[in-house]
Image 1 (cartoon, rainbow, N blue to C red):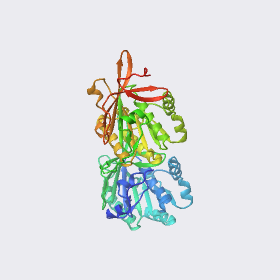
Image 2: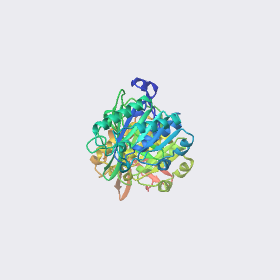
Image 3: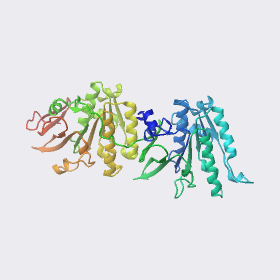
Length: 488
């Protein structure tokens, strides 16, 4: 997991005390967590992750921060809650048994209720107060609280009871999350809760190009600075995650050291050095020109020198990559076995762009690689339009540069004319530090691969066109005019 960059000083600078959630990325965009001792409203439609976020807040508080909690649900039973969060790796049953978390399922059935006087929440206060005292809770989650007010005719009573509930929670000095369903034309079903909350967070679940994505937005946060953008949400086996999308700010430090390309001839063309550590590399070209072969050479070099490499494949499985690259002398299987090379193979159309970005953050945080290979980035255009893909790749480049990780991308180009070749469909070439172009050409009835170094920032490099040779001994680069045997 990637640790939050927010520290105690930044939380203090925000003006109010913060309660850290421990949720991936969330504390970073909120400047330290939720407002301590105050209520937070979590609103959104069904399926957007409200229950999971509030439950993870309670579980991580008890497990990681020593703050016991109460989770009161108005929609699910206690056993359902325990079963549902087990898939996220949370042993809620043990936390309940050891009295670090109290679960309470409140059943509201309007057909069984007969009103004999003014509607109030006094019974809820007694029940919730007893649960808080039983475990010494510092955190509270009320999930689906708008079920309390179903069929309530008086808006005045509703407003008054909501205010009283929030005042009661503040008086108990507990950090609380209250979840509510999204209304038709308002943030919540009743359109009132957001006016009495110190912090309002909105979750959204939408469909774009037949791909579902979840997003989070902080509507307001009294007394604190916070991120105001929409942030991609990821829910997986590690729990709830929020991906900050701010750029690196162009203030990251750079390295003067280099990593070998894995090809002696190519190192020589790049000032006998290779790629700068922490830089971004793009290898573009037509189909079959050798883009993945250069990626494999780089991965093999990183692993042989004791580093770790993440290979993000959008077209081939790990076994297929290992088999294909063995034909040109690269034994990637040994690196897979040793754990130095990790391959994440997934079709781009399986998730949205934000989901891929969030998963990349997760994997990089866990693996801590020296290099990341995305092969190819052109496949992401099947998920979003060019503008969306460019934004996503810009965030990838900024994220990896700020972490000092060398990024290696391959991209497919269309056409054979220079005007087409010296252009990327993803429009990220201006962000790239080293750009290699591969193309196929016919010479006397033989297909040959040519390599151009279009640019390599910060180092002297060759401006000549060279030939790329692939055979069972590996990959080599020779002058285009020479022809020591026919290439494969």
